[in-house]
Length: 235
Image (cartoon, rainbow, N blue to C red; front, side, top):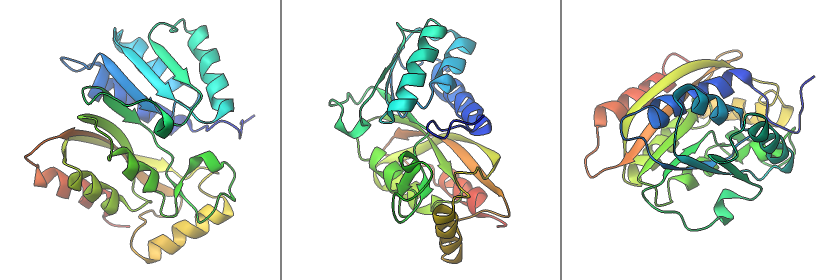
């Protein structure tokens, strides 16, 4: 039975794990201090860490108390108390971060004009990307963020560039709309944004990108253009 109090999407969860494993944990000179915005049930990070035997530390901030409780249970179950900490507080209310820390996040990105939805913690703002944009306004030199095609991906990617980030690499996977996305208020907003050419999906499918950003004076315009083209093409 699905627990509506804690976000549950196996395909998105496994994709997030793959992105973190590839772009943060398994690379040469992997960051030893990682900050996560939103742990969910903690399993994406637990899976990724176990695959590569990561030796650094990950500190996560999860505002949903039900998800926080589930994450702590999973961390204890998998004996990762020393390497993965999850605090029940908003990322934006946390301490000042060090620019050398790497930020990772599968942020809330559902668009809705109010909190009248199945899980208000999944609301990313009116267009779904306002929460994600705020992440780029912190001091992190390196970020690994999930960006969906159905919540103004152009605005999100251009905002990252305006904040001084370059795209190092990205991976993309097709995803099926979950029942969270099909909530009446959310789905109506998605359809309205599609009419405005800010939301890109077809039937029950959209694309989800895991993007590795890094602060840089030089910008790889081809990767910015390529990512935008892929997320917005043929919808």
